[in-house]
View 1 (cartoon, rainbow, N blue to C red):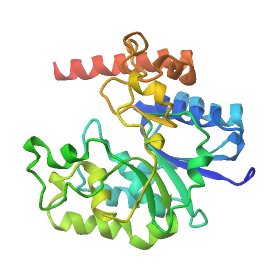
View 2 (view 1 turned 135 degrees about the horizontal axis):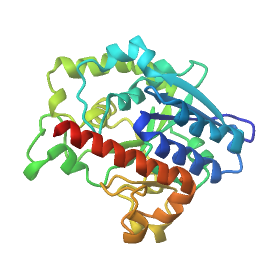
View 3 (view 1 turned 30 degrees about the vertical axis):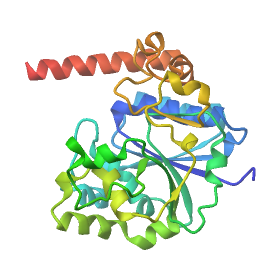
Length: 292
């Protein structure tokens, strides 16, 4: 219903501001209800320039941006202490586990999206799906046995049954009332107390442990994993660029390694696309020089 807020949460740091912008812009471009979009941005410190880039979503579409600087959040620091991180998985990604705590209690439903995504269908269609009493809706991960089983599919058999459905956590449709009732902090602490954190694939494994057989499987179109050129003709609603090759790579549109890479560049806008490329190039050189 037009006028009803559509709540969407993202997590990112200053090195991922441009994909976050492209994701929000893809959502707004794909809906007649862009003014109803309320983006909850869980972030680490951002430069003034990058903040200004992100705020263009408000001026172009009339959407609402709500900011949550997690570097100033004591509860977040306490929550992530001791949780595994990497270059690919910085601590900010754990913000999605705290959505029930960080978002106002008046919000009862939210869509969480990873920033390496592009939306092609009206997001309100996803937001309004009946969860049938489940606390969570998600899409099955197409390679889940390898994620949990790893080499020769023999690891973590004491933690997961490979025959159980396993979801990708890049897109989550969350009933926040039920989510809050589970006390996510206590759930994660229970996993940590078992001493198994080093064996888990970050918060995706954690969530699949917590919500085992307690989530609604949604249509694959709402989280098309490993999105590449072969998926374009299938007309997914959300492309999820889980490959190492990303649509913001300079050569991606030429090599056709990511679905609709040329279209993605125009969603990000050419100016920001090339500025983001320079940002990544400079970051790579700085990292290389430090190693040297």
